[in-house]
Amino acid sequence: MSYNIRYKSKNQDNSRLTVYFILGFFIVALFINLVKMVKQYVDRRAILRQEEQELATIKRQNSNLRYELKRSGTEEYIEEKARELTLSKEGEYVIIAGEPSPPPKPRKREVPHIPNYKLWWLLFFQP
Image 1 (cartoon, one colour):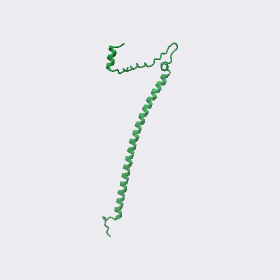
Image 2: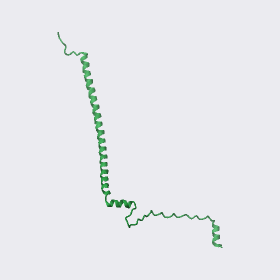
Image 3: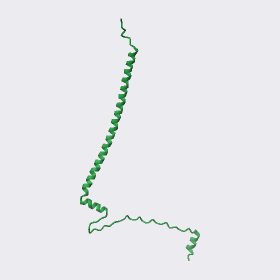
Image 4: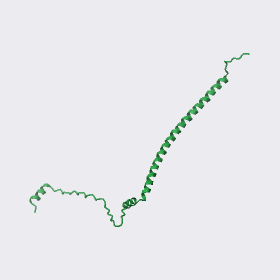
């Protein structure tokens, strides 16, 4: 009995094709998942930067408010706010000066239209 080693059956050819197909499918699936992961990473990185900027803004506001809170207990601050409310100390007078009124607009004088001959007549023969 002799065997032909080079002879391949149809089943062997189809199994190799099936293995290549499955291997290709997994490679494509891995590539798609890799692209999705990179996109998620970029999106999350952008969100992180935005949140860090908001945190920095809130920290600045917090420090400003803490400064105002410390300052609000001082005498200078209390006096400044009292002056804004037009309050005065004992023995002081508060003068509130309003906005100066605009100068009155000059009115246009309407000159009655008198014919020339009447003006000459009035000039020479005015009673």
